[in-house]
Amino acid sequence: MAGCHDLIKKLSAYADGELDENLCADLKRHLEGCADCRLMLDHITMTVRLCREGKCQELPPALQQRFEAVLAERWRKKFGQP
Image (cartoon, rainbow, N blue to C red; front, side, top):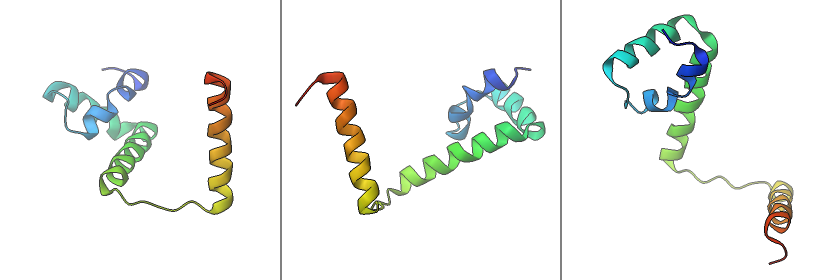
């Protein structure tokens, strides 16, 4: 059976039900004994669920300003002044 490194690449497909039966069975067995991969799968599953729900959350104003400043700075570094 593959190790964590190989299976981590397939966790998203597993969460979406897109793996073939054999690989899915291997991954299930691995998850039974690997708390780290189970935690990663839980995070992927939660992220997908939150994205599908599409709930928009307002950022606090200070965080919004900081976020926009970081994005603007990265834009300038990569593409120059707008």
